[in-house]
Amino acid sequence: MTTMGNFRKVVATCGRAEGPRLGLELNIKKTEVFWPSCNGVKVEDGLFPSDIGRPTLGVKLLGGAVSRDAGFISSLAVRRASRAVELMSLLPSLRDPQSELLLLR
Image 1: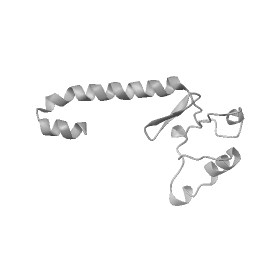
Image 2 (image 1 turned 135 degrees about the vertical axis):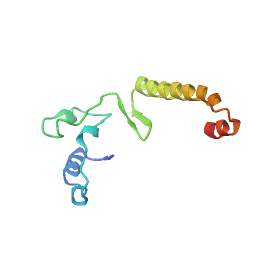
Image 3 (image 1 turned 180 degrees about the vertical axis):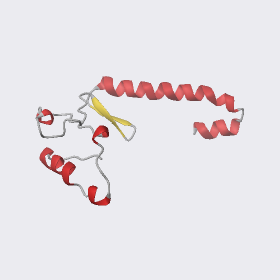
């Protein structure tokens, strides 16, 4: 769930979403509060459950980096590129040029 806006409304939304009525629950272990321009409010006691992660450099959202930190963005891009190169090196093992071409697209 990605929620943006006034932090008090965001906190209220986390607690009273329609999800529970539909049998859906917020998975706190997968929830993170990333606040690029935080003035310290996100660490106030009682505002968010203590189990919620609070990354400082950035988060990965829908496969892309959300951050103000160039190092965080760069490291994510380098990891993705190295994984792509590693997978491309395995393409010849398919021994099928058509399949290789389709996978590269």
